[in-house]
Length: 76
Image (cartoon, rainbow, N blue to C red):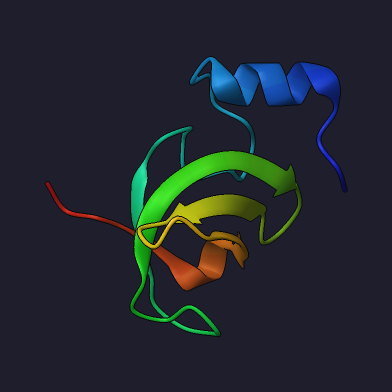
């Protein structure tokens, strides 16, 4: 399900959303799928549910839509 305007604002304000593991601007790496091995940053949450979907700006500058299950946080 698409997030509501309020949920998008909560996400951008770094407030937790149920089932959403990442926050705006979190550094991630794609571990499977079309963009496997690419790293980037979370821009927005596009779908909520069992496996939320994010818009990720990849290091190449390309934007990708990636499911949460295909992402891992970059260790600092």
